[in-house]
Amino acid sequence: MANGETKLESGGGSMLPSRGRRSQKPRKSKRLFFKFILTISLLFVLLCGGYLVYLFMQLDDTLGDISADNPVVDIPKEERASQKPMVLLLLGLDTREATRTLNTDVIMAFAVNPKTKKATLVSIPRDLRMQPTGYKEQKANAFYSISQRYGKDKPEGPNGLVKKMFGELLDIPIDYLTVINFKTFEDVIDELGGIEVDVDMNMCYIDNADGTNIQLTKGYQKLSGKQALDFVRYRHSTAKCGKNRTAESSDLERNIRQQQVLSAMIDKMTSLGGLLKLDSIFKAVGTNVKTDIPKTQLKSFLTTYAMIKKEDITYISLEGQWRSPYIYVKDELMEQAKLALKDQLSGKQMDDAGTP
Image (tube, rainbow, N blue to C red; front, top):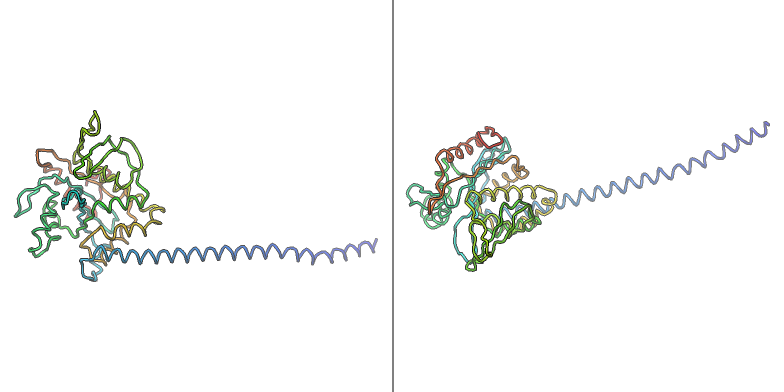
């Protein structure tokens, strides 16, 4: 019995080291696995870092192209968009070869506030009657062209003149001007893979003279860049669309559509898919957008407002009455829009309806 016990102890002693050697294999496998994961993670970080560096370089080139007319200046910190509320004028320019005009079909004024990270956007009807001091009355969409023609001899220059005109309309100083042509609008949406919007009505308008061919059906759908442009530009119908003409569209409805498309673009650009396409978007923007915002200030704008959400933007459309050839906006509605812009600059909060 004692011998049995001795054999058992001996057998047990001979087996323990063997178990120990077998247990080292899982630990070694785990170490290799963790090394593999760490290596992959480091490569991912390096790739992301490299992509971000590449994007920064692309962005730097793009900003240089956009603000090419500006001398390179260093903006004092207290004057940068990251510190100071500002008002920007955005003009959408119809530069089609067939029309050869400088009329602006999209006119928007933005007030942005870096403390609240919010914005107020006022859409101005293209046919709004305007009469800036010293000029004859015209539709609002004509004054960019007028400023380019007559502003060269003014101390403020063409861009300064158009800012002065719309600043007088809105009773607020406008800091910067950005002009975007319709080609950019199309290209950016196509780079994003289209946008999804609710088309509010059937739309059909064909004009062979300038190449317009708008044919959209009512309903929620994905639009290409060209279709999105048709959506925001649609005004009239033609008999060429068939027996039943589609209804015509007002400037107010066009302004609402512009805001709807802008909101959808913001959603798409701030998504992961949009961020991965920033390189292509930069290229699309670089040659078709011009601004008087200096490069240093552009960087400040982007870092401050790049991730702004559509919920943080208050949209205001100036509803007016059509009395040919102009649209007239009631004084009280214009005053509300002016107050909304001023309140955004001062940081006052708005309710859900956009009312101060």
